[in-house]
Image 1 (tube, rainbow, N blue to C red):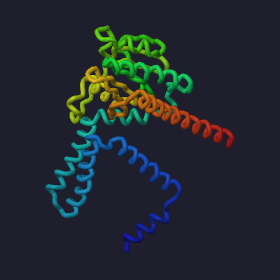
Image 2: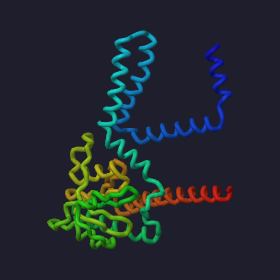
Image 3: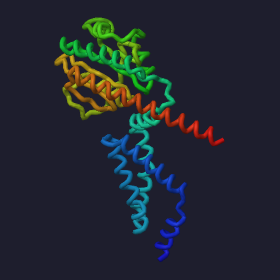
Image 4: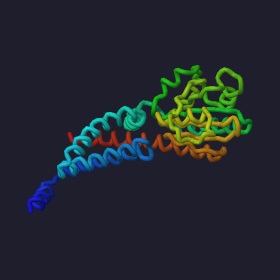
Length: 282
């Protein structure tokens, strides 16, 4: 009876703040799960949940040795989680930090976006036909300052002719990555971090592993042209997709960049609307 009374009292005492609290916490847990889904962290999280469930059960059954082991394992497990999955935690925090308050403009002008993407796609298509290896990075909200500094700064207008010339074999900049920010080629010959994922196809070369590595630590779009086969690949959010043609590549780039731009602008509009309402209520 006491248990039922406790439930009834809890339900009757729920107010708007309690509902909001529950919704916010639920959303945080949901987004956290989405960020670690299908990663190594997901498996470790399942193990931690398993331990959390069995700790009170072992205490209830007076299994003192098991209770002691599980309690100490949980303490060590949380610390191990932070150390082992530092890259995933870093990616999650960067994801949270990508808001409309970021001062970067993601090709907000439709005409400029169309021109830049067309130049990139034309260059990639020609490089693919000639089987010239290439690694192109399109910066979005995550700043790539550290990566940019590893190469040679150019600050040139994006053009297919210049991009193709950069990746000509045996030229000084052909072996690294070229980074594009808005409508400018910022830097070339840049070094990208290699992915630590050991489950990748063994046929993937250094360019593909570097593309995946950067996409795991940023929201950048990385385009890879294989020098062996001329295959065009795309790395986004830690995932590599392959076998793009000219039209398919242009379509996916337009959709990704438009999505980032619209999400940022919609957030700004909501903030401005809220500020205006606040001002009117004073």
